[in-house]
Length: 295
Image 1 (cartoon, rainbow, N blue to C red):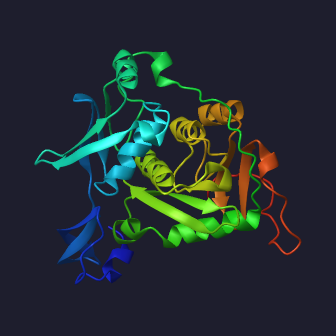
Image 2: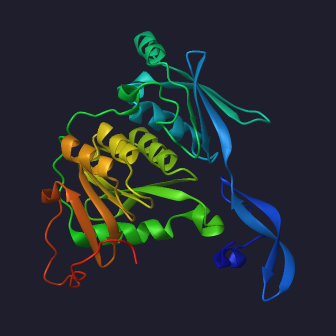
């Protein structure tokens, strides 16, 4: 349980994705019963052309963005116009999102024979073959340039924009920033992959061009995070935590600029560093060389 939840306004309704639950809080040897905000996590099933495909454990907010972003980042469709949401149904067991895609895409989907039953957004779980688990997107063509000042501005704004995390302390966030660091969109979820899928869906729904900004995330930079970003043409991804070796390999191959340990006072650039501009003369001095891991 986090202290910051104690300052929440319990008279107002929590945002979508957060609920109130009773809890016994122990501190200093005494117990206090109270209500706390906690993040929701429910099964969400994607059904394409009346055929079930995947069930993801996710936060039930921004569901249309989630459905579109998942279809795009997983390569199920090639463009937003290829997917139509026919309905979203809420059941006791979870939520079902029914989508319609072109027949040729549905046939290709059937050939993949994937049943991705994910825990908090594990898109690789359930892949039957190694070649199905690892996908390498085409090289990113966007040639953005981002300053360290813009990166820091976006990271600060992302911290302030996480309404569910502020109440629960339990969700990840993915944010989209303009090249000057102005935060444009934020999506949250208990799963880092889901938060990114929601953001990707929102980007396309609202007409943002991947060549006009960059991505900031509150999680580690795993292979799948890098894959999803590159697959939709995002050129730069900055994560507040570490990348994995496979994510670095994919980012190098996909021409994705991958930044880890992104902080106000520094960062580590693992691939395609040419997209990050040198700091200006008025910028704070960079952190001392050494380990790049979080303090």
